[in-house]
Amino acid sequence: MTRISTLLHVEQPALPDLAAMEGIGELIFLPIGGHPRAWIKRLAPLQLPEFYLFDRESPPETEQRATLVAEINRRTRCRAVLTRKRSLENYLHPHAIQAVAEIIPEFGDHDCVASEVAQRIFNSRHDDYCWERLDRRPQIKLRNRAKHWLNTSAVEKMTVPLLQERDPDGEIISWLETIGQLAETA
Image (cartoon, rainbow, N blue to C red):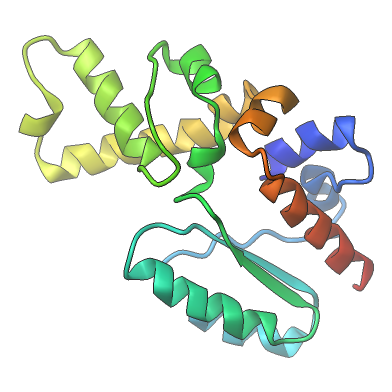
């Protein structure tokens, strides 16, 4: 999100630059995995503006997250959204991924991009061994490695036109606008 916000801020200065805001202490990112409900209860007593972004993932996790989003949105100065796509990686354009990995990924809005990319990279490098024959643990390790560079190196290859193509409804811009509005209430 920080990299994308910086990219969009250059073209639309009214949108917040999350990296700059974090750098001067105007906001804090808490990557919450596992049990977000526990964090929400811990942060509530601070009475500060909060923004939560949840990946959609797949059922039944989607429904659980939707319930949590509704609960957060009932709180004052708190907003939560559930992505329309499976995860943030689904907003990446295949050209940005190709620029980094030299593969041409094919994925839809609800596919696991990290798995798709990890599998394609592995298969492109191993003529004698295929992804399906790998044990689950190495697959997870390769997927996590792909997820990391997708959210760093591939994001840095994104442009505003590529983002507009992958997010024609401006969902990411709406998140940034919400964050900017919440920051003004701090």
